[in-house]
Image 1 (cartoon, rainbow, N blue to C red):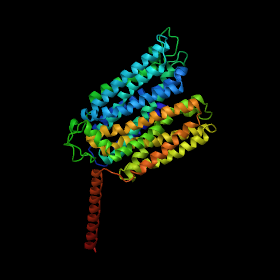
Image 2 (cartoon, helix red, strand yellow):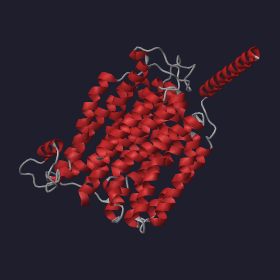
Image 3 (spheres, rainbow, N blue to C red):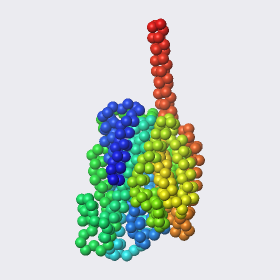
Image 4 (tube, rainbow, N blue to C red):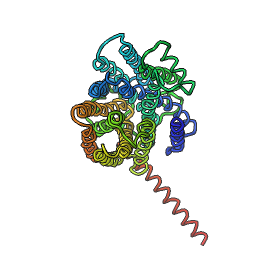
Length: 505
């Protein structure tokens, strides 16, 4: 049932993509662009499965990974992810998004294999060690390779999507993230259940196949390591498809040059070294503000996605069992809603300005964190719904800031560097909340969980308010030119109709 809902959501996203065509591209361009972004996007979605499978494994590992250790392991990964963009952002701007996504997929697959082997060795008592140090290092390596994913997909997007189309692509980007979260939590939990030694009997051919592989005769414990091996195999398959299908630019696919009217318009002939690219980003006050908004979004996003299921595991949630049981699917659906809401609000109501919907969403998240704080131990269903609404809003903010605004103002020449630094701040925020919440809920109370998140929603909204009116100069000129043409056309048509009426009379 849940898989059917995901396929329906995917079909709707694809339909909206083909329907939304403000620049009147030809059908073959739209089709070839779809062939380009779909495998790229699905690779990115499965990178998420190989990222948040740690959260799923945490509950299965029980006392081997207590809350504080989990927080530190996740923080090691997210902080590595954040600072790696100083290297791989400029690198992807040089080598292109296709090579970048291949590095991400194959590197993350190898790191997940390593995590699976470590888990197998520990659970089968072949080695005896605490998981915290070795998992911290290996998960950090995984997240280093993972960090190539976002910058690569946005680098390719920057060449294929005009600024006036990027709000909707930002929604598609948010949808791909949502699919990845579904794969991580629901598919990941399904893998855990299938590979339990005394788990339910498989009901499908895939389940029987997985159980036969990971639970051979004579095994005496749950095969939790499967939650790392399966995403690794899937990523390897998508990497092969990426080699075949992805092209970095429309020109590489046989189309004429597309001027996307972002910050690189008029500067495409210029060449930049790594230091130049980093200066362009860090000395641009707007991109710095995008990064600050994303830091707060990172706290809210992983502060909910990472901890809600752990909270539900530690504190029983009567009345909210269905939310916990379908957490991945619900994250997917609410993430899609939030991503499309942000993109459509930006493009349709605010001339592709990204600040206004970010302000609206941050204010909404502040209200919802307060709702969670007031109902944490008394109304489980209200807490679950509020958590999902925060996920919707924060996905909208994330897809607008990292997936869209950074590319708009960084331009095609510096897209990977700009979006990488901005996305890096998301995971810097994730690291902050991972350590903070992990410590607070271990040494104090779960009540501190939503209280810790609230100030970050407020700060994000205040920073986003500062960028309410901002647009790249080339975009502003493009919009003014189009509006002037529409005005002249309307005026001319009106005058012609007046002349016809006069002649008739």
